[in-house]
Length: 270
Image 1: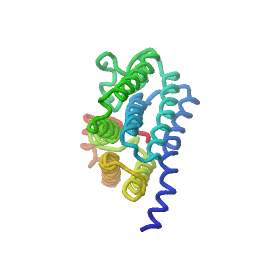
Image 2: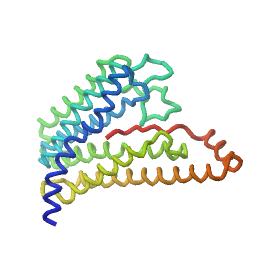
Image 3: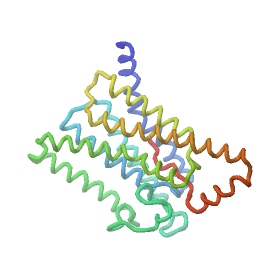
Image 4: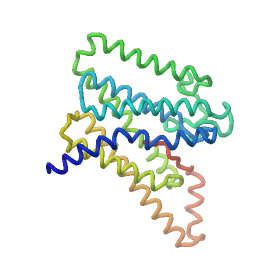
């Protein structure tokens, strides 16, 4: 057990700190080279930035593992880079292939606006202003007596981690509604499950201080990712059986998919 714990203490921190780079670098380079962020969800950097910023402020009250703090800081840098690249290369507003805003809206209503056009602004400045106000508000609260309450510190942690943990849910819903995992690569789910396995091993076997907020939200996210793997297996298996039955026996299923389905998109990249 000691050897396992020592190995995790050595390997897991490197994996966790570098995971934002290995997960998002290819996407950033792809958008930059193509000069277009068509099909990329701006909500991804929104969710990861809000979550990571909350985790940084959570550290000032909890002083949890330095590895997890470093990961949050690296994630902020990576997501700010991704946000800039995506905004600099987004299609013209109102175009057919404009930026999608999943996971908060489905493909059928991606054109609908949110209150005050939140995170759907045409100009670039409001995106950075929102993040600046968000950090400023948290800094003001942190310097006030409110930050001395343990309940406030715990709330920061649980909100930040819960935001990140619920990111797989829209993919699960999209797969369920479409009745398939079309467009959802097996390499992606394999990477997610591998990352969850490493993360959970670190949470429960590391000798560093890991608050239960990380463990609970990590277990929820891990369960969601394993369910995505189960979805992939079931829908792929069902598709193989349909092909083996022939076109006459699958006509009814195809008609139903045409009424209810839409192509599922890989909306989480972490």
